[in-house]
Image 1 (cartoon, helix red, strand yellow):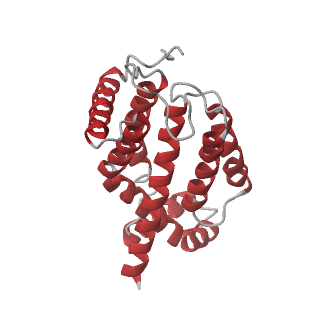
Image 2 (cartoon, helix red, strand yellow):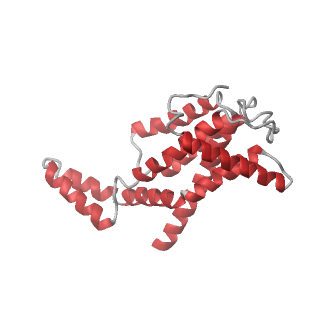
Image 3 (cartoon, one colour):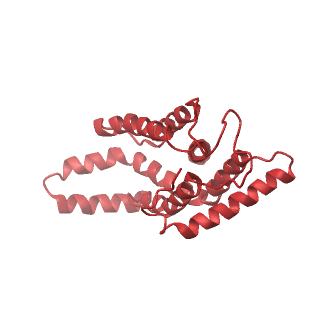
Length: 223
């Protein structure tokens, strides 16, 4: 399967690092007596999510803060709807008072995007070097999952992650996107190599666990 080359040159340095780490993790699984590139992909995904957890936590806390002040925002927007300048000033004062920043949730996503794209290009056509590319029920990590189990998991975990990250009452467009996006992810997963989809599913599971832990910790502190 040929690697898509539109932006591969841009992310080539990250791709080389990811390939080196993935190969090293495979060597670790050999030492442990369970040689498996599938296990190496899972370990690499968990490692990445642990490293970027401070950014993820900041993003989740920012989204939760915005959710908390939504009722106050709506009151200000309704009160000053005829005076946009005053409304913006009042909103900024509210953000400052409550320690919320509507843009702070975007920065961690932008920082993590190169990592995500680097993993995409790494796993899309990874050379397994003659090692058995099978894993669990998957006959080959370099080919799409013939059982459709991974595509289903990619869609289901994407939906669950979006559900957990939704703030307040989602509008009609957001509710539609929460259905369309998982279906789209599941559909393209039917065509992608199983190794790449395994990375996506593992990433979603870890993200869900991190979000649950962050919410639980914040709720304890609030109590």
